[in-house]
Length: 233
Image (cartoon, rainbow, N blue to C red; front, side):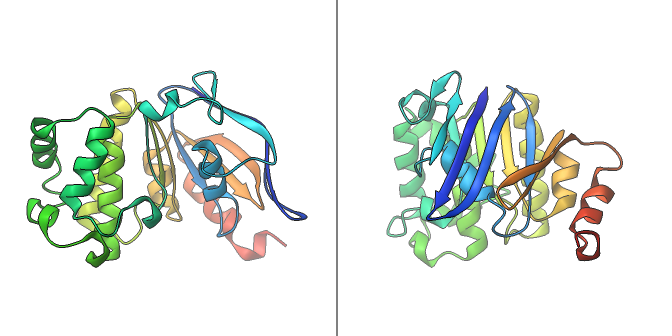
């Protein structure tokens, strides 16, 4: 579904991402792990055409994302607070997102019922987004990505600042969407979340994918071992 070809991003003389070739097949649930500065957000940003690649390209359904708008119609994403509109209420923001994807009031009402356990109804009209807690901002951004009914979903650190109940809800929702055929890429510093959810893990270090493997019963231990400082020097 998605292919990264000879993709790199430089800032001055520093290369922050270099991926010769990577394919994500339709229906995969892929986890992206790595320390801060490993290149995870840069990779997602290039996949969403938010920044310009130094070399190479990203294809989504065979279309170059930097040359086509078609991928935006089936892609949902949330990479952080910058995706929100702080002077709107949550309801206004989701209504705005919905209109971009042809959603109406009935769709909105139905969606609110589906997500009540994750983001209570009273929160939709309670003040401006800028006044929400970090956790609730994260929830809202995730909901906006889900509300577009995506075929491809990209989430950067979706579990950050979420309480345990919300984390459990989100994990179950992601499993449900993946079973319905949605292709999902997510990053997380929580290796347990990644190995519980994903069937494939990409390990990024200094902008390079150094491990691309299927998840098995040993995946968590192997990842934890790699991240131990004593094992890396």
